[in-house]
Length: 64
Image (spheres, rainbow, N blue to C red):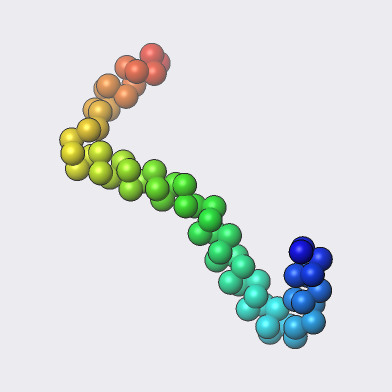
């Protein structure tokens, strides 16, 4: 599959190769940050429900 994709992209002119690269990077970026985005949404819900800890509680839990 990978070699087929490379062959297809190589047949495109420089302008179209740049477009394919641009959109591929966007897709990779979305996938890469999906887990972080999900975690942020979960934390946002917890904070709205008052399920957050104070600064002191955080550091006390680390025993630093």
